[in-house]
Every structure is written in structure tokens, then in C-alpha cells.
Length: 254
Figure (tube, rainbow, N blue to C red):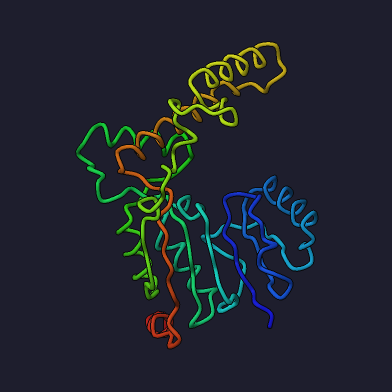
């Protein structure tokens, strides 16, 4: 049996070889560099014949309706300017009765939009990671329902993790493997980037990018500690076998 999967990806180094030879995986990405890296890694893993990439926007996918047997997204659709529009596109290209699974970056129910500290943490994450307005978990669920999906299961998996997800970014946590993320490591990295940019060995603006990344890391750690942000909100949703949602949309269009 041949299964066609669509992968909406933020990262280029996800191991697609785990799906086996009978699975065809299409990675959707709008970044040429990540696609080139992913293509190279697929070739190394020996799955380049069954795993391919399409450079496109996941808000407007270049695929016919009812194309894929499954769709998954890992920390990717948080970049969508409109969750409902993105989920509608996923719904469209997914075959009836099939599933969509995703990890989303979300603000939790503990987030208080009237709390100035909470707002600053959220803004630091958005600015540092190039994100639009970060959605609440319940906003993701609402968008899924409006798109036509049935919610099978959902949970913030950060609650079940024995180790805090933000630990590698915490400057108070020291290990040889993550030395560059400690306070001393970040200080050395910042000054090295500054020196390299000054002498022309690093592109102009490198130090500014470094400061953005620092801001993002600080926001992520603070958001994790206060439990107002999670990068591990998981849901499994299914497109109904009887696609009444698309039928009603077609009727409205006519």
C-alpha cells in the first residue's frame, strides 16, 4: 500500500526515513535553503526516491483537493498569519476520513493579556522567532472546528515532560554540550560575532540577528517557567468521511 503524506515543515532535518519504503512523503517548505538541506539529508538516508519537497506557501498549497492520506506539521503552522485559513487548506488537500496531526507553539490558559510581564514575554518570543500573534491553545481548537475537522485528541505535552522543555536554553543550566547557551557562552558568542562583523568576516547585521535570538531565548525560558507558553501543544484531528463541510461551502459558492 502506498501512503501519501504531506509534511508542513519548519525544520529541514526531520528524519523522514522512519516512514518506510511504502510511504511517499511530500515536504512543503517556502525556504530554498532548508529544501536544499532536506534534499541532501534524504539522499544520505536513502529515501530521496519516496520523499520530495515542494517550495510553496502553506496558505495556498499547489495540490488538488483530497490528495493526501495524512498531513502533519511540527512547529510550523504557528508561522501562519491566519490559523483558520491554514487549517482550511490542510482540510482541502486531505482525503475524507484521514487525519492531521500537529505540534503548535501556543500561549496557554495561564497567559493573561492584561499582565505587562506576560505581554513582554509573548512579544520577545514573537520578535525573536519571527512569529505573528501567538495563538492560545483554545484558538487553535476553534480554528480546527471552523475548518471542518473533528478533534480526536489534544494535549499540552509539556505538562507530561519529566524535564522542562526550555532547559537547554536556560542560562542557569550548565553542561559541556550546551556551554554556548549558558550566560558565559552567550557572552563569548555575542562578542565573537561582534568582532567578526567588525573585521568583515561576518555579514553586516549579524550582531543584530544575534540580539534577536538572545531575546527569543529569554522569552522562551521565561514563558516556560511561568507556564504561559508551550511549544508542545499537540492535536490529532480528522476530516469527516462524509464531507458535509465542503459540501456546504460548495453550495454557498453556487
